[in-house]
Amino acid sequence: MNANNLLSVNDASRNKRARGPSTRAVHGGEKQHRAHYSLTVPIVQTSVYTFDGTDALLTYVEERPFWDEPEREQYGRHGNPTVYAVEAKLAELEGGEDAILLSSGMAAITSTLLLLLSQGDHMILSDESYHTTLDFCENFLPRFGIERTVVPHGDYAALEAAIQPNTKIIFSESPTNPFNHCLDLERVAEIARHHGVITMIDSTFATPANLRPLEYGIDLVVHSVTKYLAGHNDVIAGAVIGSYDLITPLRQAKSMLGNVVDPQAAYLILRGMKSLALRVQRHNANAQAIAEFLEGHPRVRKVWYPGLPSHRDHELAGRTMSGFGGVVSFEIDGDAEDAYRFLDALEIPTIGPSLGGVESLISPLAVMGYALLEPEERLALGIRDELIRFCIGIEDTGDLIADLAQALDKIA
Ligand SMILES: Cc1ncc(COP(=O)(O)O)c(C=O)c1O
Image 1 (spheres, helix red, strand yellow):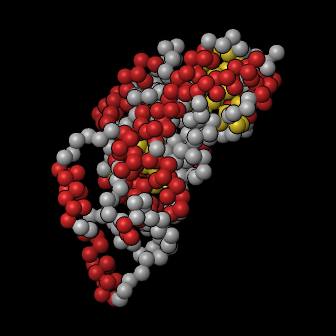
Image 2: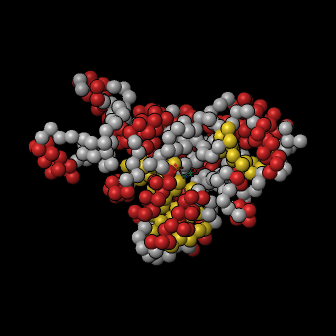
Image 3: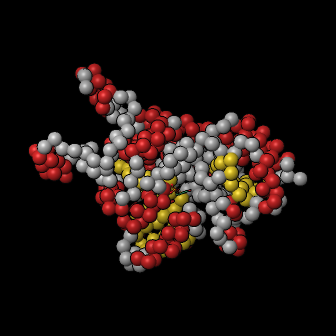
């Protein structure tokens, strides 16, 4: 490290003006000086870290508990420098003290709940949580004597009424999948604080480019990193961001649960995250234009997008988010056959689950994601056969709208 570089690092930390989302996405959490003077963070592809001799080993064993940064590891399950780089960037993007990267979004959710809840505890979650999260809380956690109450999304009175003396966690999403319902996070945080309950928000749909739940007093943010954060439909991962006090035990649990991310995948995530702010701007703009187009189309019955004044949470989303996201859900004015005809006529979006990547993906939800439910159960969740979830990529707006228009015309 030369003197000039030293100066620039120190200047940067002295002049701590708040940086914009793109600068944070590109540089956030990244050290200025790296092995071999490489600009990019190296992929440290190893499962083992060695010691030059017993002196080095003893120094590691004796001094490690007092180190601020867990840079030096001895085994890959406990940590990896490429993974740490992703975690530092995530913490910076969400404005949290610390972050942990885990093997999937579900690993992030289940590990956190398993760590924070013990036998006899109770949690509350929204009825619009991701269906696998609901499944875990309803059918898996009770095996360990952990009970849950499911409350209607956005019903703050029901939320507060559901709190019991043994309630430890309030879990929700904002915006939700697939109807983009949003939460007043400040209000949820206030209710929880009053009762000494931890709040946890799945912010996968929003990303830190559109919403930063920690700024509203939420304790923990979880992400399916698979989606917008990684952004290229090529990797599975999850993350939890929050205070050192909450993340440190999760880091210890990771060494036991073993739900780690491979360094190659960590590098793909890091690379993807650099363009997060830019990509999300395009996702937002595309989705807004498409939602407006669909809402005005005679073959579309209803559109759910928070950027539309017709959406239930338009005002709340406008007040709390810097963009409305990239998912537009809508119902074809017709039946399942009409919906399939429309989907099969599309030339740009591909039929597939997931969201948040550069490629547009589209799905008829009744038979993708909700196919195992009985028709009455689906209807109770508002999932009709003609409901379509469009997870809009970063293609050109005009091309996407032209494609939707020609496919809607194919419905007789
Ligand atoms: C809102 C939300 N949370 C969590 C998950 C689970 O993430 P993963 O598939 O990375 O485990 C998903 C996946 O679709 C999701 O949409």
